[in-house]
Structure formats: structure tokens, C-alpha cells
Image (cartoon, rainbow over all chains, first blue to last red; front, side):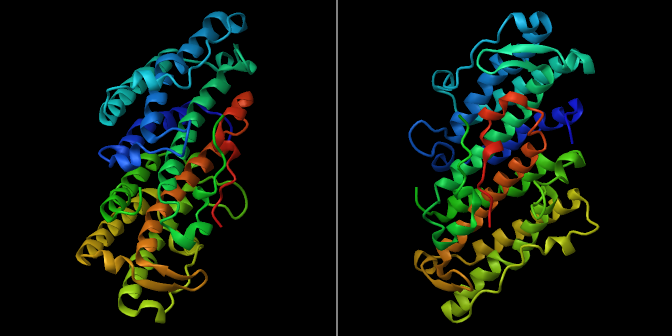
Length: 179
Length: 179
């Protein structure tokens, strides 16, 4: 398979509800626990995804369409959720993520992107030139990398409780942490 | 956190619906694609989880409670779904997984396990002695390892489409495959 806009949206539109079913009303021992210093708990991840909906994906798509490579994207703050999530319950954050994602997917549809739009290029402040197609593919894979991370962070809490079965459970050996 | 029965059930009861929201009506390009020879697609994983509900987790719990270490568990067939899923749609399999999981969690509750029950031991045919507590912890982490695997298998389909962003996406570097 190679990139397809409708199939990309099919992933993006499922993520908020997938995370809501997985995490809503889950005991804090699962949702607030991380994998050690400077790693994200499931709660942190939801705040991070919200920040992305507000400042990253569609904002960058618009920069590409309006300014091309002349105007580099703003840097992304990977730790913004430490400020922005403060005081919010996980349930509230999950609803906010769903609301923002719906809004962003409506805005994406309104752009009526053509294949040649998808070839348009922008300037990532670190990675250099990227296309709109790559940005949208990354939006979907970014969702998947965080589902992957949440399942790993949860499994980590039981890393000793599984006893000898540890050797069969790939999630407990995963070193695929995002930079 | 260490093992707690209610918290373990909190994960187990969410898995079928999490997978249903993630996968139901998703284009086959996502749900039927794998990571190469002898790896599982999301569709394969659902069949594998169904086989586990039928033959593994609660069956092994009963063997521990009835026979202890005297009667080793039956070997688990990791490729049973190649026969058993044949001809079934993904939607049908997701419903079957939900039905079997509900049934098994009711049966688990009926056992009214005490802490000393959880210490009881059984005999794994390869790993040797294991406790009922370890078996139940593994049931939950096994769900998580397959959510982890599904997100990785899906991300893999866009491994080239994300372009230079690849370096930031941990899921594309994950080597935590289950044996």
C-alpha cells in the first residue's frame, strides 16, 4: 500500500474513540504510570495528542499551502502537556481530543486536496523539506506510535508480575521509543 | 503497582471493544496487511486472540485449580487462526472475541479467587512452574502485546510514506516482536 488520503482519514478518525475505550475510567495505576523518568504515561500522551491537534498537523498543512518552503514550521513542544493538561481529568482530555480531531478532519476535508496539492513542499525546522503527503502520513503514524507507546507503558507496570512468560511478550522487550 | 485482580480485569474487559473501534470497517489495506513472511496482520491477531479465549487462559486457570503442577498445560497453537478464521469477516471475528471474553470474565468472577488461590502453581510445558497470578497478569499483558503489534503492523504500511519523519516515530523502529 502507498499513501491514500481516505485511508489516512480512516485511521485518524478512529484514534480518539479507540483511546477513550482503552483508557476511560481505567484505574490511575494504569493511566498515570509511566516507564521511568522523562517518559509519558497514557495520561501524558493524551495531552500530547491534544497539543498536536491545536498547534501541529493542520497548522503545518496550512503553512505548506500558503507559504511553501519559504516559511519553516514552528518547533513542536513535546512537553507542552505538562502545563496544558494540569488540573484536567483524563475523561475531559479524551473528550477534548475527540472534539479537536473532528474539527481538524472537517477542516482537512474542506481543503479538497488534489494529488498535486499533496506534492507541495514545506520546510521542517530540523528535517528540511517535506511534502504535504508526508505530513498527513505522519499524522496517522504518530497516532499509531502513541497507541503503541500506551500499550507498552501499561504492560511495563506488570513486567515482573508475568514471571517466566516475560520471554514471550514482545511488548516487554520493545526498544522502539520515540525520540 | 503490583498485581491486582480487579485492575487486571479492568484491562481484559476493555480489549475487545478497543480493537473493535480501531479495526471495524477499516480498509483491508490496513487490516489484512502484515510486516512480512510469518508475521500477523491485525485480522490474524483477532483470530489468535479468539483461539486464546477458547483454549488457553481460563482452560489453564482451571488446570491449575484442579490439578496443580501434576498436569502440564496443553501446548498453545500460535497458528490455529489460519484454519479457524478462514471464511470469517473481521467484523464477525471482533464480535466473537467480545462474546468469548465476556463469558470468560464471568467464569473468572465465579471462581471467587482468594490471594492463596492466586499463589497456586501449575506447570507450563516449556517455562516450568508458574502461578495462577502470573497466568492472569500474562493474559492482560498478552492483550497489550497484541495492541502494540497491531499498531506496529499498521504503521509499517506507511513506513516509506512518512519520509524524513521516520526518525521520530518509535513504532517504525520497534524490534519488540513476540516470539
